[in-house]
Image 1 (cartoon, rainbow, N blue to C red):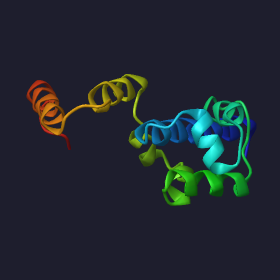
Image 2 (cartoon, one colour):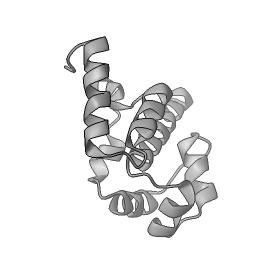
Image 3 (cartoon, rainbow, N blue to C red):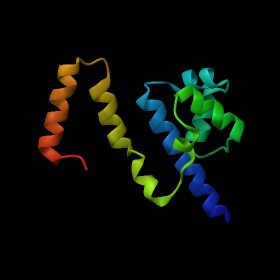
Image 4 (tube, rainbow, N blue to C red):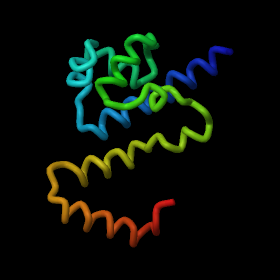
Length: 118
């Protein structure tokens, strides 16, 4: 496997880690604390700057309450599952301390604008 492929894996893993962390409304520091790692290291992994051992990756998956494979499956068809930065911003905006009926209204508006999710 070439260096380019390794960078691709690190980038995907970092994006996936960031998406899952944000979905759970955790800061890098909080996830680091829960997994026994530093928040700084979590950020470096998310940016693809550092590699993470399988032991640490397992601890992160436990802290996120997801199967390890959800973090590590880098098949091309899985890349679509990583939300864009804009999608993450929309998710954070909508879910930040909102009443369930307000979230439903936001969903209805987005569905009307973009059609049904596939």
